[in-house]
Length: 209
Image (cartoon, rainbow, N blue to C red; front, side, top):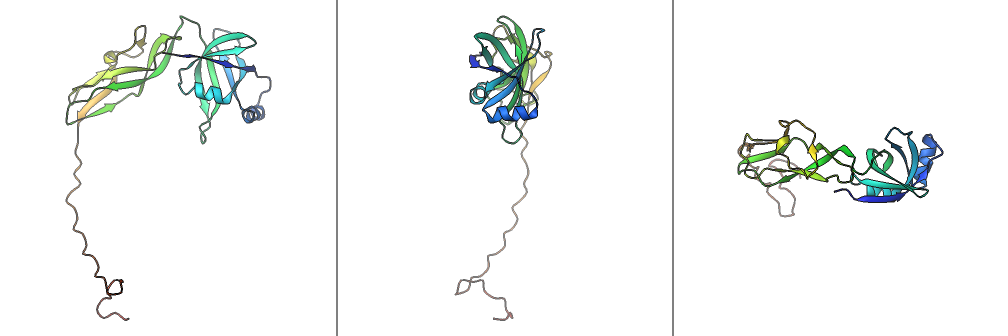
């Protein structure tokens, strides 16, 4: 379930690419908070603390500014393509008891029948859950599943109060027969060169010294 993390933030007053680059050099991440019909709020968040917090993309954060607290969820996290550091975050405001749709990882339990291969078609799925009680993952059980079987959205196990936002017959995973690759017979290896008394390869007949 979601853990609430409190982060002290400050109002962002300077805008533009130059201001954003300067903020990052100062150890701050530019961010915008949307939601509930209010105007977007532009903020600066501490880089190290925020980066650790959003390792879980569905982290529930409490942003604290001038003594006021606001519950938010990450909506979009932009990262530097090369360094993968967080460059900008869009948040949405949430309230206790409010339900939101988020993507969560699919956890796999069990092993399929011998001689079969398990294929996960969807690594994550959308679920509807309370913003303050978001699951980290949902579960599918493939124990003993035979080739040709499918695991559908209706087969996914979700925590109480959570529903999967997919049609019942949406395929999450498939089981297929293991295909053995025919690599053919090993090619005959070449005979090793004859080594002369001095350690070098023996010269061919008729060659010069």
